[in-house]
Image 1 (cartoon, helix red, strand yellow):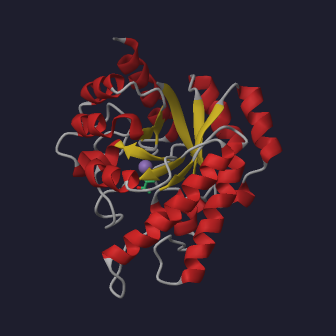
Image 2: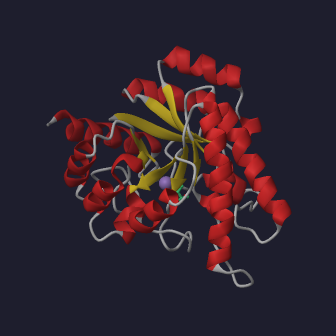
Length: 272
Ligand code: LER
Ligand code: MN
C-alpha cells in the first residue's frame, strides 16, 4: 500500500475534507517533507491543472499523483451525471473527461464522487441509475483508451441517494460492460453505512481501486474510533496495493492532520 494526502485548489472547500489548501507548491512541499508517496488533487476544473507545473512539482519533490477529484464540477457548477437536463449531463461528462485527460499524463485515475448527484422529485431512481450507467460506460471506455481506470465512489446517505454501500455499488459496476470502473472506498462513508467496513472491503476484493483514509469522524486516522487495524488486515487479504489517501478535515490544523496521518499509516503498515 502507498500513502497519499489531499490538496484542494478550490477556496470554497476550505472547510471541506482536504488537508492542504495553500496551493500546489505548498502541498507538494509538505507532502514530500512528511514522507508521503503521493498527493491527491482537487482542482476547480481541468483548466486549474498545468501539466508542466505538475510535472515539475512531481519531479522536484519525488511524488506521484494518486488521483484527481472531479467534485468541484458539483460544488462550483452544480454539474451532475444524473441531472434531468441532458445539456447539464453532457457538460458534466465533458468536465470529467477533461480532468481524466490531464490525470492520465501522470498515470492517475479521476474520481467520480459528488458529481454522481442524486435523484430528485421529478425523476426516478431507475432513470437516474440508467443515466449513471450510461455515463460510467462512456467514462470507463475513455479510461480504457487512456490505459487507466475510472474510480466510482459510493457516498453516505446524506450526500447521495444512489449508492451508499459496497454491496449495491459492486453489483452495479459489475452489471456494466466496461471493466474499467473501480470502486473508491472512503472509510468515512463506510463507517456510516457498513455494518463492518473490513468485511465490506473483503466483499469488494479486486474491485477496490482507491481508498480514502479517514477515521470515523473524518479526521486523521487515529483521531476517531474506527478499527483501522481490522481494515488494514482486510486490505492485505484482498492484496490491495493502491493508495490510502487522506481525504480528511484539516483539524485541528493541516500540519497536525498530515503528521497524524503519516504516523498512523506507518504504524499500520509496518507490521505484518
Ligand atoms: C469525495 O471524495 C467525497 O468523499 C465526498 O464526501 C465529497 O466530499
Ligand atoms: Mn471521499
